[in-house]
Length: 93
Image 1 (cartoon, rainbow, N blue to C red):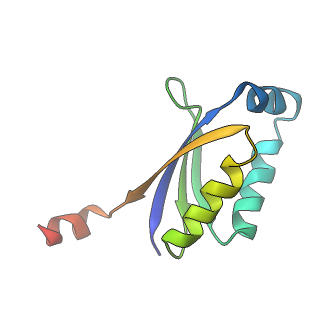
Image 2 (tube, rainbow, N blue to C red):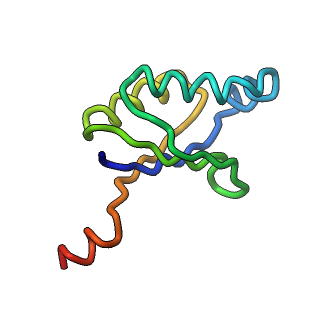
Image 3 (cartoon, helix red, strand yellow):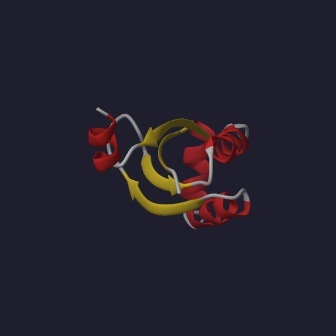
């Protein structure tokens, strides 16, 4: 199944939401599953992005729906990258 890296940056509203309810992060992961994808790994990070998520989704339409649905709430901005397994990348060269 295709893998994607979702880089997320909280908006001021998102920061307040997480501060008031840290468990909201886990609730979002469940919502991702309801949208047809699955969070494989997740890290809180320091720097330009607040979170890095490795997400598995059956296709680009599904991950686009996840990004659009979550981003439309105004609490997080996403940058989603398609991740290519290195062996697949090398064999394509």
